[in-house]
Image (cartoon, rainbow, N blue to C red; front, side, top):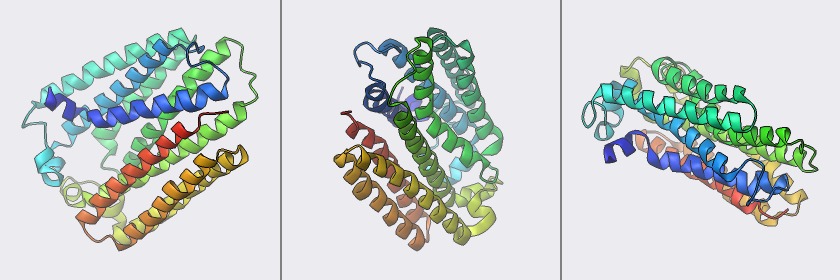
Length: 309
């Protein structure tokens, strides 16, 4: 069982669940004036949606390890699961079963909110994650963009299903709808950009194994110097997104959010630029990857501070 949990990255799945939980209960429901006890999109339906999202991601991790086994033997030999602790065909079976479950759960929730077309959201995400592992991971930037899009989608999907539930109940006219959409954009853009930065940093960290695997990642094609310039540009975009969040917090007198964003997140990103500038070896990029993971968590946790409207 421990092998299975390592394969599906259970700690990452827990983070996805936390992200969706915080967005729903700390931002969406308060801003649409719905009671957390009896919202239009029921708590049970939300749990099913959250499970479907987690299972999509779990399937993606499983198939990624299947295709990456040779590269992982170079980049992280002590963490290789496929071929050592689990047969390759079992990884494929795990991915197939998880994908089917995710699509079924997504279909159920889609039916509950009155739009069976939403089932295609999980189908698209499952397909993208498979294509990433099988074809685009080794390509220039495209694989990074797919992973970053998937990270941002974990927030967007909650908004999407909740909005369909509101639409079906004819209660779409809410004074805070514009503000809600601003918050959505801030967090989606933040999640996308930080994920993209981290994916590029991980490519710089794993450049040795990626070269042997025939990958054409940004650090391999452009080198470390140009890669750092791209990272500086992306960090600038992340700071802009956080500045909008900071501005909203100031306007609506959410002082704790304002100071949290400026002191914890923006300063952390400024420090990240320095670490990138001086980074020279694999250990430096490993540290950067961990730092960016912290920034992602800290950014998502800021949702918990947005509670009283």
